[in-house]
Length: 268
Image (cartoon, rainbow, N blue to C red; front, side, top):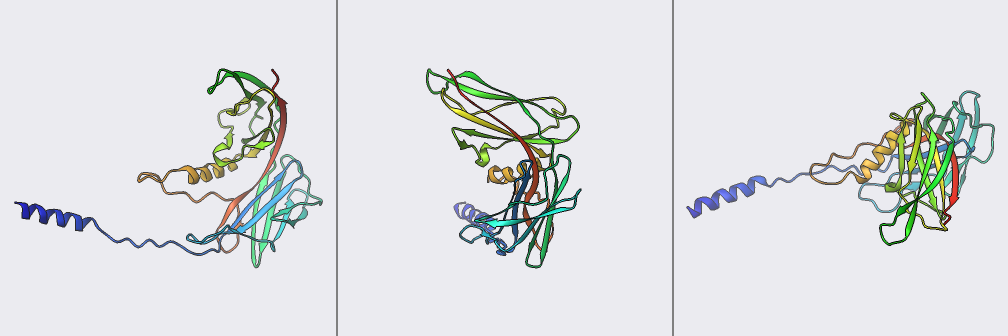
């Protein structure tokens, strides 16, 4: 009886072992282009190259690309100049106009890569209020800030809120605050920000109006970053990109945005 049980156990264990050879690509030939153009007439692009899966170090910055910004409606074209680690627009003929479409073109060696984006209309911040809330850590009172705006009807906007408290920007991935207007089209927008404030603190709120496609990109980036690694977690998706052309995959996104800002100091 013992011999039979041992034979069955040995067969079971041997039958469960299987060597799997995972083919992990090691090519480092993919481009990453992160770029934007704002209604404050600021254009910035960061161009880099991926590293191998098992490689060490940071992505290699590309400083010899030709980067241009074109306003399609007028045909005006400006060249972005390399400054430190970025390509920036110093001056030129392109101007930010709500509803106009802009094309970013990047030439790296013999590869021509491009993306287009529409400039949204600025959505004004109507009101910024600080309300007292019970403190979760002491008997003292803390404050939370609420912002009010109105979504323009029928424009398919998305929004991202950027918050600075005492000159510190909350910009880590898990602190991103964004949404599209599928449920609030043409309605008032109310943002309550989760950052506790005390008397004497200052806070600055920037509401960025974005093309609605940018939300899809943000969703995939954050899903890949925080999607978990359990046995039943879905595999990471390829992050959506609006770049076309070139001979290889291009990661990142080019978008236009318009923003409005307000700030206040917490008073007793």
